[in-house]
Image (cartoon, rainbow, N blue to C red; front, side, top):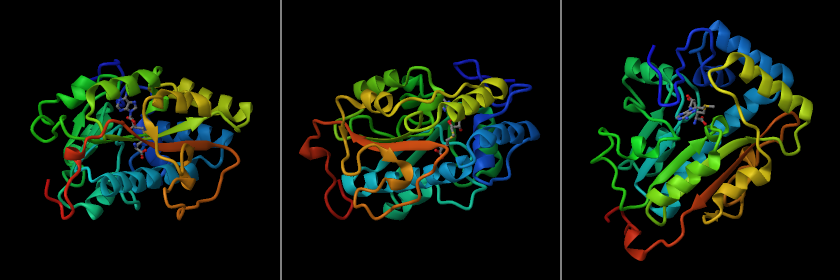
Length: 283
Ligand SMILES: C[S@@+](CC[C@H](N)C(=O)[O-])C[C@H]1O[C@@H](n2cnc3c(N)ncnc32)[C@H](O)[C@@H]1O
């Protein structure tokens, strides 16, 4: 079976796919019995995981739409998009196109399951491209992305619930800082160990270690914030539970006892006036 640059593939025999386990949490239909077993092992440790996952999904769309509207950015790259088409929730692409129907939204994932799913459906994210967040040149210089995105202009980059599968999350933020135009916005969410019982974190970590194609890395709130040094974290709301993230404070979901997912938007400073799109959509 094909595998990505890390050697992992969602179709590895005997291992649960990250995308399908997440699809199970979201009440999608695209998962196997092994994915279900893995998800249930996680849920036994932290029963709020499905609700937190749904709030994370909503956060990604809400924050992406906010970034596009507020910063007048017309190109969005969603890395680690997952399986979005069979869900009763608005995807990043849907939310972005609602605020700017002319925006370009490109999606990447390193899981063959996600790519196969997108190919089969040929709608929504019909064009999910193979890409690994640890290989940013493979993403931004992907032959099918060149010509669709202009790296000299700001981008919105979505990293929703993907960096907690990466051993060196800080390196990804450094790589983005080196490649993106000033004024670009990163929307990021990540599971945290802060204010979560050690027993629950250990249980969730073990479930992924035992059954999934990748381990999961729970990081402290400070370990999630620190890689955004050199970026302007949008505050309010700052780095908060995803269900509490909205710059105008109007979205206030319930907090969960058993699991926390933190989210933030961060702007690469040095934005020049010429990057700002004129009102009405013309550049
Ligand atoms: C938990 S799902 C999140 C999906 C979506 N971003 C969301 O938040 O609703 C994580 C996704 O990231 C993908 N992923 C994991 N590691 C990745 C990597 N190194 N590069 C690209 N995608 C990755 C998985 O295949 C999966 O589809």
